Image (cartoon, rainbow, N blue to C red; front, side, top):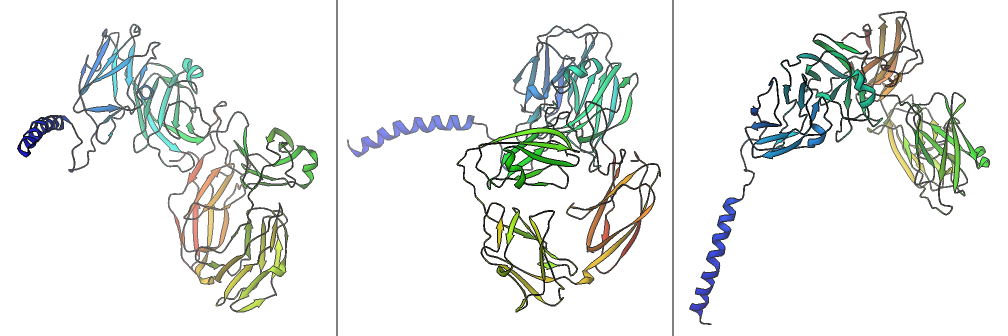
Amino acid sequence: MPLNKKLSFFRKITLPILGILTIFGCAVQQKPHGGPKDVTPPKLLKATPANQTHNFSSKTIRLDFDELFKVNNFYQEVTISPTQDKPPTYKISQKSLIITLHDTLKKNTTYVVNFGKAIGDLTENNLVKNLTYVFSTGSHIDSLSLSGSVTNVQTQAREKDVTVMLFSLKEDSLLFGKKKPPIFTTTDTSGNWTLGNLHEGSYKLYALKENSGGDKIYNNESELIGIPGKVINLQTDSSNIKLKLFKAQPDKFRAEKRFESDGHIIILPNRPIEKPSLRIIYPEVQNAEKIVEFSRTNDTAQLYVKNMAFDSLRVVLFENGKPLDTLAFKKGLKETYTRNLAFLSNVDIRRLLKQTDDLRFTANSPISAFDPSLITLMEDSTVLTNYTLKQDTANLKKFSISYKWKLNAGYTISFKVGAFTGYFGEKSKVYQNRFKIDKPENYSQLNMTVMVPDTNRYYILEFYNEQNTLLQRTPPFIYNQPITFKSLLAGKYHIKVIYDDNKNGRWDSGNIKAMRQPENIWVRTEPIPMRGNFDNDITIEIPPEGTP
């Protein structure tokens, strides 16, 4: 084909294609680039029938917004109260939401459509919060209200984005923990909430902070719950209702269990066990050589069994000497395990050790034997021999080195291969740790005088560092008393006080079935500053229980 004819053919084909692409390109709607970030949620412009309509008889509700929007988890977020047997359907038309009702409406009844966090804008999903549409099939719209706040009992901080749920007394046992609440709202950024358009009657009020998602049903023991202190007999508006979030004590005891990669067993009860113990009942011969380690809070157990040549194992957990639960374990007879001894020391991240402390090590497995000839402690370039190495008989993972440390010296602790033998016969690898001794002037003493509001009540004081690590917990006390904390590094510390109602020396959670509230906690918001080589004397006045 001649060149001029080729060019003519190319133009005939190309130009129409470019035209089509231009038309479609212009039709594509894209998210605009640049400019300030959109932080404004859609705004409701009009409702048809109007919000607060009396003698409502329509089968459809139309809500017009000022911008395009999208919906999130619509059938989870949106509720109609009273609950309908035939749920409505929802349709988006441009900037409007059309709701079609399929159930027969009750006579002389106020209905509230609560949208939760279902509606957000297209660009940033800025949510329309606490949007409600209210109508009445009679001549009167219920107008009573409840309001209050939600606080985390452990931190005493107000909690945002918590679902506050209201059940009538008749609905409570039928719906709570089984279905989405008929009436609910969400706390704002200050932890406050309001429920309106309520009818006279008796109600129970709950708060729920879910881990993820959000079906608004309390069906997970790890979620935080707030329970009613009493039944609310609603006759007039009620405000300043306080709900306390806590992890509830489970009604039934359960324990998760698993084999770790080295072959030992982890047991995770769903609540702390009082004075726990454990016994292997099958194969019973394994019981004599077992090692059991319970966590300080008695909510985790680690079980080490010497002979792993079994395919099933049964153990009994005891609480206060009484059988609590029987757990069964199964595994393959020829399973293999990975076992590597590792150590953590009490040398801090500055590579410093307190002069009055022993050098302490914690292994990741019980130590069955160690060879002192394969352990070397050096002071600068001098090999030391006048130190004491001992194992903790109460916890075979722990051992310590005692020595009179010198301030200006540098120390090196070294383990050669095989210095330690683990419970399963595994040998330690080469290990080395260098450190120096911290100066005494970097530490101080806190002298605290604690004043109690009621000498007929018991209290427990907990002392924390800046990393929120619990450093010390006092036994229950009833009278004003001095408490001393020694050898504190410079920094800020804080305290909590538990109102120990049952005098058992620990904080006790609430129980939903018994409708028992958790024990109260007071968190002192003002930190306690400590400077190096400067003792601090302070007085702490515990407020009466229930003081804001």
